[in-house]
Length: 193
Image (cartoon, rainbow, N blue to C red; front, side, top):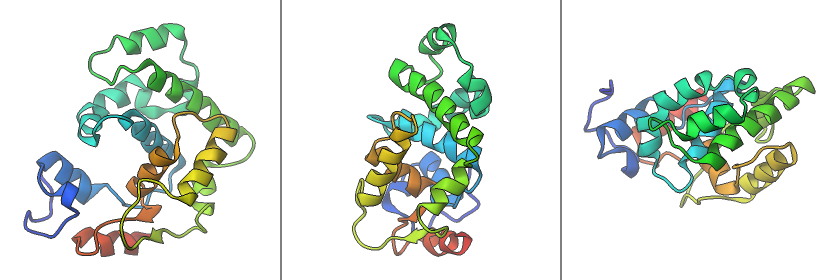
């Protein structure tokens, strides 16, 4: 879990103290993601974070991936009540029945979009004009854009996608670059966008 980046580089304050968080910050957070399935997985993981710390999600991410067949929407959409019970009793994951049920419902909504000819990745990037937003100033927990996208997702059948979850997801997937102005990753992810 060692980052390939030196420890003394300037980082976002949240990504500078804990080795696991530093590694996530340096390798993943804010890096633009365009793959539909990967975007969906990250949205589901942000849903699991609600009310918890991201550190907990990172610690359980591998187990969550295993439990949800690497977040394959096709497989997850077929989960039954027995699968929900199995997952609620799986101590390796976050065992919230409402969050587990949301992932299953969201897999079905994702597939419905796909069946109607809409690719999830193309859809979300179109919401911001295809290019990452380079945010400056204080970072909110939600904004008008995340509220609009949240409403749109809910209309499409998604759950556990409130505006705060959506904003965190947009940050994590590089739709919005909120790396601190002094952070060494800010310019790198801006180039990737």
